[in-house]
Amino acid sequence: MGPGLLKSADWPLLIDLYFFLGGLAGGAFVIATIANLLDAQRYRDIVRMGYYIAFLAIIPGPILLIVDLGVPTRFLHMMMVSKPSLEIGMSALTVGPFHLKLLSPMSAGAWVLLGFSVCAFLVALDVFLEDRGGRSMSLLRLVAGVIGGFFGFFLAAYPGVLLGATARPLFISAHWLGALFLVVGASSGGAAIALILSLLGSRARESLSQLMRFTAFALILQLAALALFIIAVQMSGSTGIAQALAKLLAGRYSLAFWLGAVVVGIVVPLALQLGGGIKKAAPGMTALASALILIGGFLVKYVIIAAGQAT
Amino acid sequence: MARTLAMFTDVSLCIGCRACQVACKQWNQLAPEEPEWTGSYQNHPHFTDKTYRLVRFFEETDAKGQMTQWHMMSDVCKHCAQAGCLEACPTGAIYRTEYGTVNINQDICNGCRYCVSACPFGVVAFNHDTGTATKCTFCNDRIHNGLGPACAKACPTESIRFGFRDELAGRAKQRVEELKKLGYKDAQLYGEDTNGALGGLNAFFLLLGKPSIYGLPDKPKLPQRNVIADSLMSIGAALLVGLGALVAFRSRDDKGGA
Image 1 (cartoon, one colour):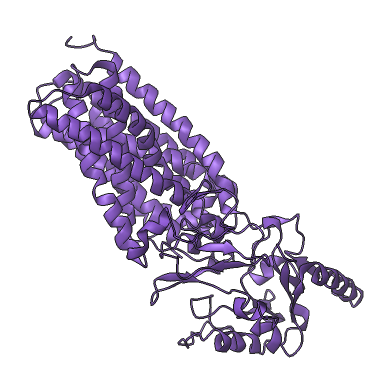
Image 2 (cartoon, one colour):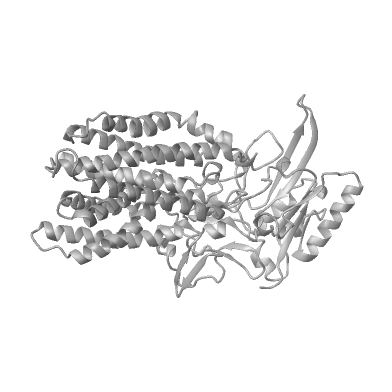
């Protein structure tokens, strides 16, 4: 009976795309920051490309979100209203016209999107100026990189937590969606950097193969998180959970799930990596594996959101 | 906060006339909708942006498919003490009034629809014409003028009662006892207990059987209860990813050399 009663936000593909790009941006940013902290010279290509990709991938984010609103002109209400109501939730913090609701991932996410965008802009600008022959403002890059890195983790994970805080049976029954979305962000961020670097014919073969090794590690986490998510949902035994899960594993979305998210997105790229094809960082192989990871990273978010929202 | 106002719907008195549904439409000036045939007396199948009060019909059948009992229940927004929609709303459009009810400020809502999927009862609906989320307000304009909600006023059998929560709760408990004496063994209250699920519902019900007969969740859960656990899991995953990156980018001297 349960799920027949519930309604769905019916968030369209635009939102899936934002969740994917946000995760990718966060992942690429974090990778660039870690590489920058470890050895800025040696990983120069990864740092540059990571920060560029993070900035470019986050630009469409706010646009996608605003277009999807019922009243797009009120997008600022996500953060501020001129006359706030007094009681807007148990976790609400209000300062003047601004508000942040700690238990509403959408509210927190709006703020983090703003903070991340500022950091991504600053470091991308710094990288750009350096590329044009200027000197890097390394302190700025360090500070904005580290702060933005924390925001980047948040940006990748929060859509999963957001979905978990709905009444939809597939989302509410387990605690794994945030973790899953975070590791998908890590793998797609790594894959995006590797794809562009291999297409541009980067000469930093060794650091590229290190990046691919990290991406493969993220893929293993992704597979584990996905499996644990499904097991946890199955074991929760909540009302209507069997039907909800069947939509994902055997119904309308099963092909995209098994073939797209699992085989194309995880198994094949992992096989390519473990089979040694990428160890030498052959550009063609790296590009192929990275493209598959990106496709799978989008599909895994898409199918879970679509199956969970279907009524 | 003023004394909490509440609505008590006693399904044992409901005759399924839908006067409440009509009165709600009239007072709130909700546009008509195409009826939808579901095979049951119930129309419409769900709450919508134009249906805030909905009489649900449930035909209980035995193994042979013969109808054994006919349940009807006038359903409405529960104005939960811990409301999923209110906690989800990122704009602060959804707020709690001084009477403990939950309203959506139509001038603030920007139509993100998070509340629609966060309601454990599927009450909040998205209005495509205004681009905002809407639901029952307990007739906010009426109760601020001492009139009581339109549905409660229209109900001919006093199945729907409106008043102070503490008074109604006492009356509801008495009614359960009466019904039990009359042989309705499974008569029970749903949402009356302020220590129960969602901190109690400000629209609570007297049901003649298990909540599941009426399509209601046995133990509705506040979706935001997940946020902390989900966040901790995400932080764990973030630590693993960070560690993986450190290891991958640290191991510099294997294969090929620098």
